Length: 167
Image (cartoon, rainbow, N blue to C red; front, side):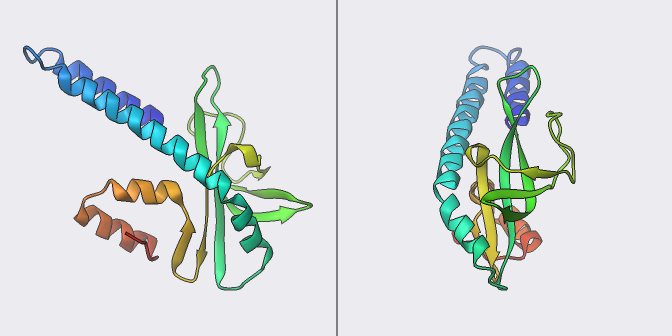
């Protein structure tokens, strides 16, 4: 996601360069917006790690109304100081170690592949979530992305997720 935002900001800068005096200002606003989003997502990752004990407690309770335990873990990208954030589904605990299955196809990291079973490094979690009935608990990055949508996009997003979001 950070890569996409960086490309978008760079493209904005390139296209604004030739449009007359003062045209580069919007590119700087785009870069500032990207920096703010990175700061927001870093803060969200810290919040997710702070709620990890609640996540693990809910996981251990084996409540049949509590489902879809998922975490987002950061993985190193080769030749970069950046991280790729990847969802890990079907999370379970084995001897105090969280494990799960890589849920999306990694775009940049070579450390894992789609459907690999992995041990989760709790220090590298950038989000965690589960469903309690039809309500999402956690899912901080999803809620953040949802907050950036307009009303029509948000309604479509909500229909796709089929759960209740708190506004």
